[in-house]
Image (cartoon, rainbow, N blue to C red):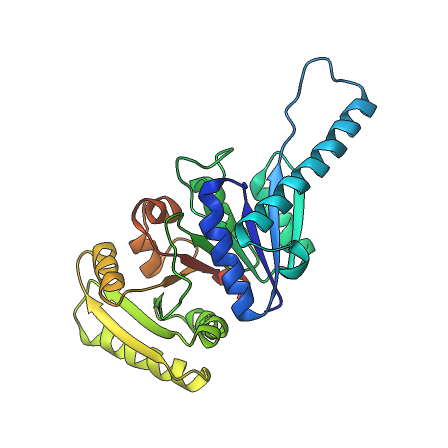
Length: 281
């Protein structure tokens, strides 16, 4: 991995995600791009093209200055010493601006802060985060505003026994290697039968054959309440990151977040969420 992008609204409540993004990029030895998407409000009477162009130019320089100060203040160093590149982009759509930058800059992971009542412009609302998870060509990492840990000791990967899960876990090992993390692979099933046990045995064998990472465990949990038991599991092992595969609305993950993936995670999850998109693996 060479490039990670973190998107921010430069608010006090997104500082946690900035720290998380910087720590992750430092551990992975990647460049960190910090993106700020802004808009210029329209004012009656400002119809001259020259005036609008000058307003845009001034706004761009102003927002770059705000973004630079935001990074330097909260990371306690000059930008030149941090291996950070800043990007300020004018756009009416936060989602489209982020997706465009992912493509233009060949971003390999995008990090966003989880929405709360302090977010500006509806930034990273359910619709925006869901669009990024579904449409992004790279993994999307969502960081809660109250998450402070710099460590990734325990990573949980929720599987539905698909081959795409194996490729996602393989990509995940790059992060796990950097932090010497344990990857806990879990499947929660409503059926207590031999078929589910056979699927887990097959999946475990495939993962261990194809992935060169030793610190992986496998758990099959039987429960009628998939979501609540996943939360219990995350609490029990003190998970630092939960990883899901976006699957076009079907299977285990669809059952887990059938109402709305992002809205449910925003409401109930207090650890970071990393989502891989099956369509781009």
